Length: 359
Image (cartoon, rainbow, N blue to C red; front, side, top):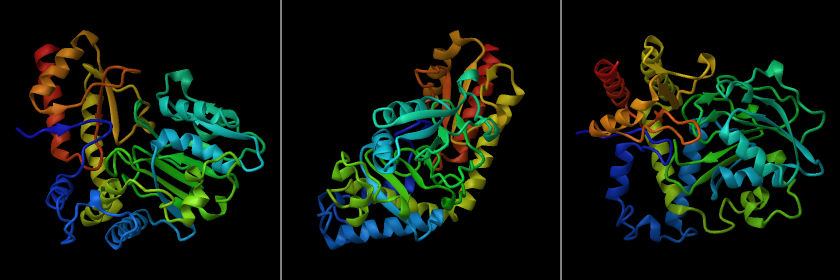
């Protein structure tokens, strides 16, 4: 029986990537070493990280005036790194609150600066993205922060905010590389790799050159983007194996036809699931239609007493990790790039079968 893993993260990886990593585990390209054993400053790993960055730049069309950093600590650590690196002489920053990950970003930033919540979706249980016409930006913030895809609530920005001359900072952990985008509209893009890029432990940061050198004096060197950029992400030992796997994923994406092709597939996958949710009254999709995530699809059964039965049946059919986050409950299907369309079809077929048996 084929297993389909709908985990929100760490998440499914392309099968061919896992197979290649297995084949190269003991001996990478005739070096006689596993990537895990290599010196991060040796010629072998240097070639790995340089190719990974080059392919990442190609996929996203990253302009030359942006640095790509491969760091550690996940998005939660980056929530502290951001004010540390961007405040400069300013004391405040604007945040848009669209859910649980936005709230974590706000909480962490409050340790370093005054946080102005310029808009919030809390009034409707974080089921939508506040339109920019409702934003109340402050007069002189150091930056404007958004979470472009809320993994828990299934809310995604399907548009790019205009922050004017203020740097727009985006947590893109859970939908990076899922669609085409214009990097130049952002000052900083960051996220954890464990959803659409690679294994847990790797963090990416794309930062515009002119934003380097603003770090607070208290910023540790390892957290200072300027220091890391000057050392090509090797101020300390980077997460070497995570970078290697990310590089294989980047290669896989290029082989699929790049982000234009991947986005078309992601649109098709999401449509299969949302179309069914819209035609049934047995399940509920809580998110405003215009703001639905293509990557993370939360849904609820009308009769919550059936939740456990639904999950047990899904498990028996090889449909794994469908339980919703503890904050919101219900179900959640994460259908990242590596989830084949067959997995989404299998889920919908099971949902129909469960409705027939329990409706």
